[in-house]
Length: 131
Image (cartoon, rainbow, N blue to C red; front, side, top):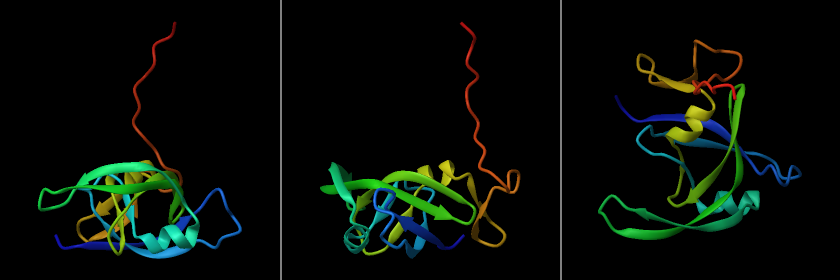
C-alpha cells in the first residue's frame, strides 16, 4: 500500500473567530498523534501547553512543542486533541483517527468513515459493573 493523503479541517476551538484551515494530511496508522507544522500553529493562534520529547527516524531525541486544543474535522466527524509541532506538513496519527472512528479502505487507499457506523462515530468500551 502506498502513502495515503486526505483533507482535514483544523480549528482552534478557543477562538472561533479564526477561519478553519483546510489541509492535506498524511494518514499514518503507525503514528500516534496529530503533527502540524509551525505555520498552522501561528495561523490558528494555538497555545503551547508543554514540550514533549520525540525520537526522529535516526534515533535522535528532540524536544518539540505540544499545542492545543485543536479540533480536527473529517467529513461528518470531528475530535479534539493536542498536536506535536514538527515537520512541514500535517500528519494524522492513530489516536484522532480512532476518536473519529475512521478506517482505511485498502481497495481504494482512502481514509473513510467506518462503514459499520456511517452516521456517528462508535467505539468499543469496557462494561462497568454496578456498585
